[in-house]
Length: 203
Image (cartoon, rainbow, N blue to C red; front, side, top):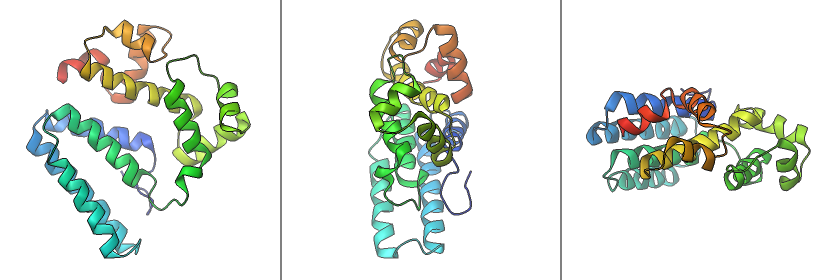
């Protein structure tokens, strides 16, 4: 799951990891926490062995994450918490000025308009870059194409709605910007490895 010294290779690898954990633990909180602690420990150790910062600066951040982990009492909340924590802490390990990356600005803009009809031309104007630059930087900095990044953003919101609302699949598909329920199901299964109905039933 890890690249040569730069955290996770891509968001796709992170999604694979989350799918594996969900299936393996079957909602068992103790097992979920154990997996989380093991992963945090592994990455913290790798960072220290590579010399990425001083021990005194690295470890307090790690222990804060472990402390937060103990406060989460619901399996589905824990899965979302872990996905966000890993993405923020480790997906972009070693990258400087992450907030200034074109891909970061593009993903932030996607998060605002995922429910609308989104085109690379419209979005590129919002982030002040050409469509070709947006597509190139997304691929080089996240490993995803424009379409994959947009679908990933939409699926993330769909997972939240499946977990915390009673909306129908058709309503969720529409809210998340999918053209119809059938396409939503296809994209969701590709990203999560199970369909949205099965995902909700599992939770």
